[in-house]
Amino acid sequence: MGEDSEDDYADEREQQGHGIQKVVLVTPYRGGSTFLGELFNQHPDAFYWFEPLTQIAFDFKHSIKANSPFQYDNGTLRELPGSFSKALRDTLSNILNCRLSEVSQKVLKHYFVTKMDKSKKMAPYRECLNGSNNHEKVKTCLPKLQTKCVTSSLRVIKTIRYLVHMTDDLLKQDPTVKVIHYVRDPRGILLSVWELEKKRGISYDEQMQHASTLCQRLHVDSKAFQRLKTLHPDNFYQQRYEDLSNEPEKFTKDIFRFLDVVYPPSVSDWIEKNTRVDGGRVGGMSVIKRNSSAVASRWHTVLSAEEQMIITSECSQVLKDYKYSI
Image (cartoon, rainbow, N blue to C red; front, side):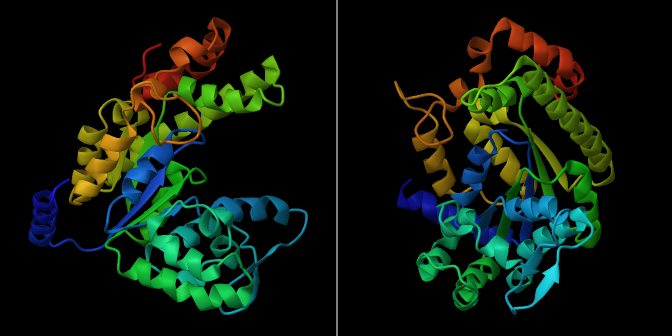
């Protein structure tokens, strides 16, 4: 984009006079959400956090066998909260409100934060840590992360570990939070999952179980979204991965409009550079340099007739819920 586009963006942002926008992207595993998250990561006003609940979920599972403490910035140790949903909610709330000293050190030390380049605004924190993640180093470097958070007017979290119905509890605590429910055709999700699992060998029964478990979650999420969207129409938005992949600029603008966030040239540039490539490789985990529309529709040609039959059998209601063809 040229200088005029940057000036137009600055003028529009000034005219709208935005306050703080807090956003949670709720999505299933292998739902293509890295693509949506990266769009937010390109926004100059965004503080984007990729999967902060990963370590919380891991600790909660293992706390059944052994009490696993959380270490906080002030050095105190607290037992994992008895309520899993409360632990998740509090972590999301603390990040969205930049109470980072209240976030578990295990979250702040997680490799998604310290090793992977998932968030532009986290770069100064990663550079400060310089490969070390002991308590004192995290405490020393945390102000750099805190500064990036409080100076960002758009705070965004992407998570696969939070169900739609759980956001009701988050909204009761903070009614300004916006929730984007990001969905994908279960056939596309299961293709992605099975391609990973087949590397270790996966049985027909396991494939059936994957389909059943996934579509149970998707159906529960669908019902919860409809209920909460009715109660809080200004807080809930649903986006299909396939629609965003086919027309990324159009639907990204729609999402930003819902959030009352200016659509900046940096996002438009990223879409142009990273969603259309002639002759490029299709597939894989990276969202860079691939035809996004082709990735979204791969299941049509890659899944066998038997695999498609499994999914249609287990997921017929979900396909109807999200208006996918059967």
